[in-house]
Length: 583
Image (cartoon, rainbow, N blue to C red):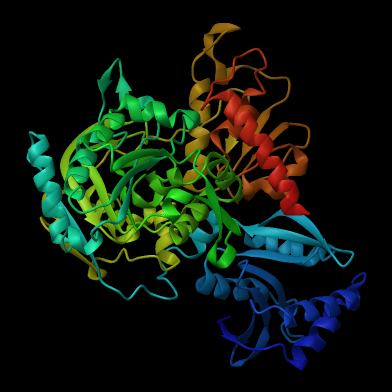
């Protein structure tokens, strides 16, 4: 069955079919009338007509402002013949990640949408009618669009520069290499005009990069590179702001500046150079184009007032996102609650959303020392002697990943950004200036993800995406130590009165035992949440997973991902946001 979509209109035949479809549903005729009225008055509504075998197959009502399918309706000829999933296939080819909303009492629609990969997330009331809101599993999206090119290809050819730095990495050599890199991209004057305000956004994720007072490369942006960048900018820029919001030690960005010597950069010219903690900056709320997963984001005012933004991430692996490069590093550009919320609504999509609202003019990846294995903070330093630069985050990340020996499709946020038109990954659309990739490539060791369970704990992977797998590994790994009740066994092998089952991913094999202790991870398992304990998020935040799994061990102190007080406060704030979101 080959289904194609074409933009249409709210026709008479569609209206008649909608009324006929809902005439036997409770308050159905009122629902059809109410929805038709709403759609006629909403400029964001698009009607897609589905064609199958050269004939009419049905309609999709799609809200472009919220990326939500508000109706899917087959013609009488095709009703009950399984055309609807094919129509959704055609829609996600065009629109990528979508949501859905429909009458809660429509049990048949709920059934097949869950089978497809949609999951219930909340309900809302419209005109006295209860509507079910569902999100499409990102794991299902990845699977259904695997190997498929973007519907709207990125036509512009991007340039990515690669610069090899001498092995000694002296400050002079780093500065010369940086100057060469920028010259390959058109020169500093292309990016910064006289007197402009320049914001440099490094990656200062946490204090893991300093061990026993010794700097460990590959975790945070090397201060020598930022110093070199400042020295190049000073003759031109009016103001230089170094801005970051630490992701793990949220209240300690200032301490991170001091720990890594960033505070001393101000001494170069205190009249021009300053530091800003983005976690405490004033904020401006901006609408997310297309409203995917979140309708708006709060963005630090520092970025809004900047003339030029330079993103300086690190060449490193990430245990859940595959890599933490230019697309991923902008997570540090939003305040703590926004970071926390992005896990609940969908981390990968929210990372893509940020790039619509904060647009770096220049990206310079610090590959002086990269990080392989279990990044972004617990991996192994890998000396690379490289700088990688460009203006398009997807193209820059694609080149960096190939240098790391990785396929760009391996990283969920990079792949989603590409599929949604933010940039190219195809070699023919990227001009690499400098040494070819083959000359500087050095495969990075991948982290070994182990989500096996224990004696009475069974993990059901369910074809989960790297997000849930990575974060679950992070937590389960903390159970692979001696049990304080019996040091002769591991904590993960402690016996329980009831078997423990941890479900993740969109696919659930076998029947769920309602008498067992069931834990359901993420949006992918939200449809099963009533049979156990749900851990909300996509992927759930590490704190959420630790709270859920360590509740099985009340006598064991729960490890901390970050400051416990801060995370508890963020959880309370998130609940308040969700309550407003559902009203």
